Image (cartoon, rainbow, N blue to C red; front, side, top):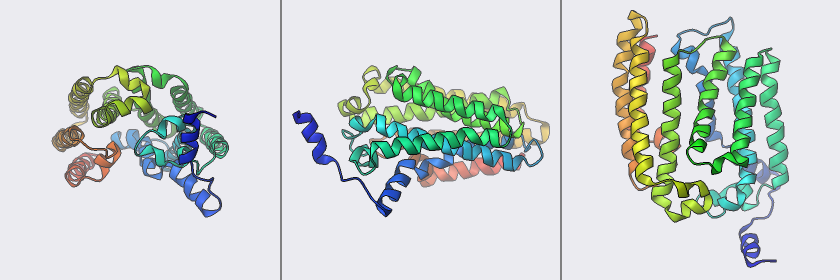
Length: 304
């Protein structure tokens, strides 16, 4: 037995049982990340239409499908990344990395969730939804296996998960999204991923490379510049989308760009500070950011 193995065994907890096991499963499923799956409503919301009859129900099924699929990815990723997670100041406390949730349990639960996500499209007889969920799972598992080590490409693959949710919702409700709106969603997702990489590298330095080897290819200044450039591109795409709307909605949606710009500026400020706070928390727990988001939503909805 090597010294490294011994050191790893020292920090592992005993496998959880009973209620502790349930809590470990829920923690690994990351309920705080589930709101991401509401992106399936993006196309119907932007189009001011639920599309088909009972479109809300179909969109809810799509949200559930991606919910199960994303949870499957969390379980499998945590098993694949357990060794590196133990070197991370926050991730070392994840149930799989700490030993609370055995690898076997995580893999079995991940497989069941993946099957549930794929079955949702079949349940409502929507093969395109099943195809988008399958693409999401394929890209995500490919990312865990190899693609996360390919610089730049790994950023695009992470961002694609957000776009596939939008496409899945569009497929389920039969509401085709506009090209400009897809560009907004894609650039917004890429901006968040760049911000996550920047905060990791800027705040953890060499430690970030230990738990995410691809970080050796990145530089904080380049990631920061990329984040700002993508944000500017997102605003340009949003303005183009708003200008293409019908006259009754155009004024409101153009006006909604103001709080959107303010939100992006606030996000850039928050991610530029030295902090270990997850990027998701910066988007959902900062008061000024929430005020900007609420202002954008109010103007956006007013134009529907």
